[in-house]
Length: 154
Image (cartoon, rainbow, N blue to C red):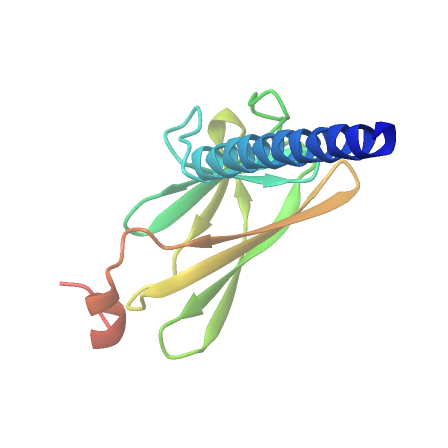
């Protein structure tokens, strides 16, 4: 009888452990998912879209004919653009690409002209910051699927 009691007690403990582990994984998974969604949709100090890139974050601010990028540290503070170099590759609706160099701008911005008469769907910035190359890809949020499919904006 003692072994029967011991086995049922062990069985109950295993079930409790399994339930506790399941709840823990559910809570952790939900927390991580929410953090990723909020992080990818967060606005930066210059009202742009932020993406994490290793030890840095890159913020993109879109305008009609140009984009500004800001390299941010892990605390969200803008890093000096002194000595920073790089390019932006624009991908278009027709699967072609164009590469433009970045220019250093005021307030530590990295400035790039958007190729005219084209609608880009994505742009990929690749910059050298303090000897380290960082790269991030952004979707063009100012263009609709209709514009992309039609080939130009109205």
